[in-house]
Length: 412
Ligand code: NCD
Image (cartoon, rainbow, N blue to C red; front, side, top):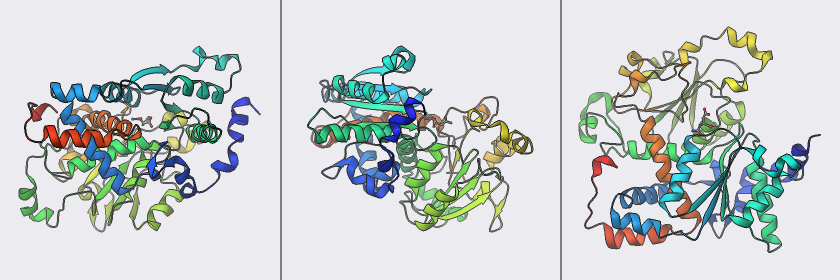
């Protein structure tokens, strides 16, 4: 057995427990300490995070607000330990730290650290915790962040220094902060308020008076969420579907090739159904559900790339039979979507595969670049929450800020 596997084995019994048993261990006094699983969030915490993010994005646009934010956490340092490729998660966490005055440092290539001299990951992590006040990490190992949280808890039990662990993407397993920003984007879109977050042509009242959209409501409940592409191997899909299932009367449509590695995993399906979600699985955007083509019934469509890096030679023959073009959007398909629907993508999109061709970028339904920007605000909100300055932000915002401001709403 290689050394890495041995490391994780120390925590095996704890990893094998159901998530609901683990959640209390990741909290302190009813607040999150570590952020490892999307299941740690409730609809109330999601609302709370979105409110903090909304305040931060407004404050950051004025000189006084910006200075206030910068002065919140200048005594804190963050370690970004990202040993798996990342652009947006890494940079938006870094920008989020900068907004709050937190100093950042990074390790992205373990070959530059003492891990090459035989040091265990846990010794590296414990060392990071000596120098930094939060560790934000991404790894190919699906359970490493979870194990690091247990390590920190054990250190705490022995009165050693222990810092929060934030999961920035764990193998094929979970990506909770991506799910936070996806939810935040949907919350803003379905508030039907800001024209920048939902560049549709019609306002909420006009939409409601359109006979096609009778019964339309604000918020995430009662909507139809589509997920298209590599459903089986995408950690972002799993984490987002988990969070959406917290809202009542939700329908989810999974559009993926019929292959055990690519389609919805039975465990996730079961969990969603148990939580009252109506789940449909289809093989193309044109497939009909209750007589309506899937593309026309969606309130949002979460596109994903096909994660070729996980292809296994054993599947090559089966994959060669799949018509993957069915998992690519075209301007024609987009024009059939609801006027107010949102197209999301966790990014990176694959320019060779073309699941979202650039011609779609200027359609008012294309929300993926806003979504990436939202990641910076919601991650700043998450860090503010973890360091306990969220209430300070609300107080400042309410007392100093609600009356007058000098920001230009259009460029937020
Ligand atoms: C995703 C990831 O790394 O899981 N990207 C991201 O964090 N925004 C999706 C992907 O790699 O396809």
